[in-house]
Amino acid sequence: MKHFHSLTFLALGLPLASCVGGGQPEVGFQAALPPPPVVQKIAASDGAIFRINEGFAGYHEGTRARKVGDALTILLIESTTTTKSATGSTNRAGSASITPPSAGPLSFLNPAALNAGAGGSFSGKGNAAQTSSLNGAVAVTIAEVRPNGTALVHGEKLMTLSQGREWVQFSGIIRLADIDVDNRVLSSQVADSRIIYSGAGAVQQASKPGWLSRFFSAVSPF
Image (cartoon, rainbow, N blue to C red; front, side):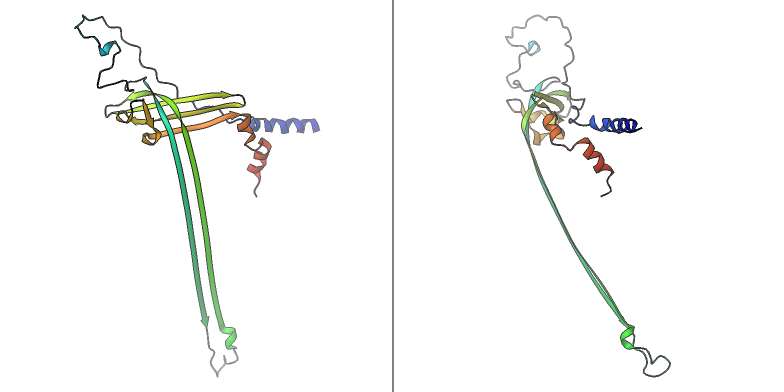
């Protein structure tokens, strides 16, 4: 029976132990590949030396990313600081008194016993502060070009280190006009941006409490 209880305890702990390690990168950030090119017949030469349909960019167009599948770099420059404070106080007091008559059947009442008073006060204060920053760069590809001059981009960077893995995933909507000559866009210029920076491995596992500690923290009422 003792052996059975030990096996039951281990069976309950295995699902919790499997949660350790930081998880896996979210699916959905694969590079957007352009559609296969349509085979076209070679047209007769018009005498031009550089033609766009053969891969040459126009003089005013340059080599900036503009089509589905083109790559560009997102410069991650994120810094957020939030501060919140709240203060509240209340104070309330009341009193009541009755003076008994000096003659009559109620004259025996003690005036001091007929006085009542009540009061209450409250004072509270709360503060919260949070600071986060992220700096780096991640290459993404254009997944969709929209008629209003914007484009949907997404991409990821996966790094395998000696003590685990780290990954950066990014997606959002950019303006094609914000792409500079080096095919870079600041993350602060991206709308509806989604940035995920996480990892898995020994370092990530060491920064978290063990599965047994998390179990007792979840069921403890204190």
